[in-house]
Image 1 (cartoon, helix red, strand yellow):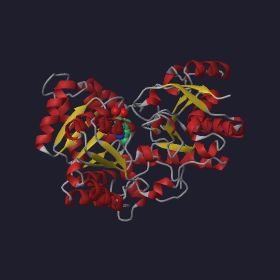
Image 2 (cartoon, protein in one colour):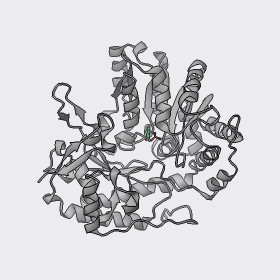
Image 3 (cartoon, helix red, strand yellow):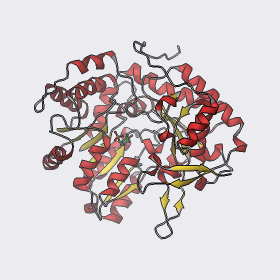
Length: 458
Ligand SMILES: *Cc1c(COP(=O)(O)O)cnc(C)c1O
C-alpha cells in the first residue's frame, strides 16, 4: 500500500512559537505547571485539544464571505439546518455557540435533582452540566475499555447489561435520557459500534427513554465502523453516519470537532415540545433560533465543514495520523491506549511514572515535562480532571486512570511535526526515573483542571 499522505496542500501558513528550555522552565513556573495558563505564542506544537483548532479549508473561508447576518431568517441558517438534517435526519436543529451550550439547554430542561443520566463516558463538560442541574451522571462503558492493552475494536461501547441493571435500579422515569458519546472522548477517543448504537437505542425504546448521541466526532466514529465492523466496508462514511443518527432521538454536538469549526455547535432533536422549550431558553441566553450563539458566517463555514468531514480521503488520513503517532511511541517503549482513538493518542502516565502516586498527579507531571523539553502542550486526563472529593474530609479520591492526551488538531500539523514530538517523548522517557509528582496549591470547585495551580514536590 502507498503512504497515506496529507490530502491537502497548504495555502496559508502561521508561524509557531519557538523558545529555549530555560525560557520554557520560567514560563511553566509562571503558569503554575498548568498548561492551560501558558500563553499560546509560547507553545511550539499545541496538542492541548482538537477542539476549535482545525484549519478551515479554502471553501470554508469562501463560505464565510457569503454569510447572511440577518437577525431573523438568515439564509445561512437554512443552509446549516439542511446540512445537519441531511446527516442526522433530526427534525429540530438549534444552533448554539459550542457543545456545552447544547448540554446546558438540554440538561437545564430534563435534568434536575433525583434524575440519573447514563453515558458510555461523560465528557467533562457533559458531566458538569448534568451535575449542575442536580442530576447524577454515570459511566457505563464496557469493561474492555479499562484494559488499555486490549485491541478490542469498539471500546466506546456502552455495556447493554450494565444499562439494563441501571434502569432496574433507578427506574426508567428517573432517567430523562440515555447518552452515547461517539467517539468516546473521555474514554480514549474510542468508537462505538453500529450494533451497540442499535442495541442501546432498542433498550431506550423498550423503556420509553429518549436516546441522544453526543456526536462531536461522529465522522471519525463512522469511519471506524467502516474499517472495523463487518457489513459496513462497502458503505460510505456518510451512509454510516446517517444510520448512526437514525437510531437516535436527538444529539448534542460541538462543531469545534468534526464540524471543522473554530466555534459552534447544535442541539438537534425530534420531540416538538422539548424543542420549543429549548428554543425559548436559547433566546434567553444564546440568541434568536436562526443564529443561536453564532454569526451567519459561522453557520456557513460549519455547514461546509460538515460536508467536508465525511470525505473518506480525509477520514483515512485522519485515522492514519493517530495510528502513526501511537505506533512510534510504542516502539520507544511507551504505553499508549490501544487501539489509538481517532482524534488523539493517550499516553498511560501511570506506567510512564510508576514511582508517582496518583494523588501526586503523574499525568500532570508528564504534561509539564514535554512542555519543558519540547514546547509541546498536552492535556492531563486523570486525577486532576476526574478525581473526586471525599464528601466529609474533602480529600482527593484518585481517578482510575492517569492519561496524557495528545489531541491532534485537524489538518494543522504535518508528519514532520509529529516526528519532532516523538523525539521529545524519547528524551522525556529516557529521564523518567528522576521525575517527582506535583501538589495542588489552588483550585476551583468545578472543572478545576482549567485553572488549578500546582507546585513540584521536592
Ligand atoms: C468538546 C466536547 C464537548 C463540549 O463541547 P464544547 O464545544 O467544548 O463546549 C462535549 N462532549 C464531547 C465528547 C466533547 O468532545
